[in-house]
Image 1 (cartoon, rainbow, N blue to C red):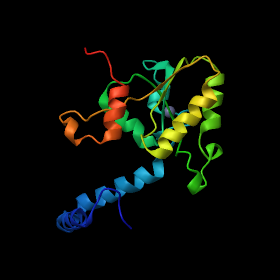
Image 2: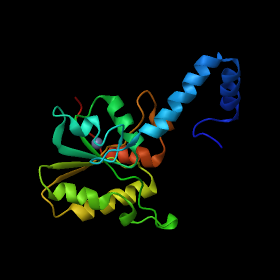
Image 3: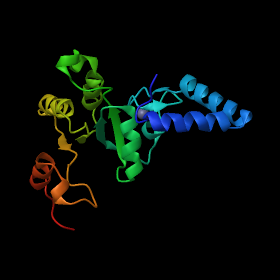
Image 4: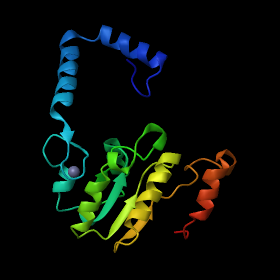
Length: 185
Ligand SMILES: [Zn+2]
């Protein structure tokens, strides 16, 4: 078994760390890991991760319920929350449209999304799928599916990474950054 983002060197480092770790701490870690796997489930509303039937974000009255950010995977919620820039709600698709892998819209949480939008109260959706071929195709599909609904549809912007230089941005990223330019604040 391999873990995402953990190469051979890191795997060795972790293995030796566990070897040296005091037994009670190691047992605690294993029991936390087991409870993580056993207690977490998908939220009934946004399909993100939660310990309850409905997650804290969906339950919260402090979040703007008229804006819905659409992401590919539950972990994307964590990344966006980490920015502290978003106060709305989420909807997790649980994948992207990928004909080569046999994944069409019906395999994703798109029917649930349409039901949610048709039940009213949502005025904006933010398409926050990844800027990959499949992520873009999914965003395009959703735009076409939602275009007749009274919604503002926005797509997350792409640009040159902060602290980087134009020289190191690939031509597509730089092209998108020029097209999606914003007034300077
Ligand atoms: Zn939720």
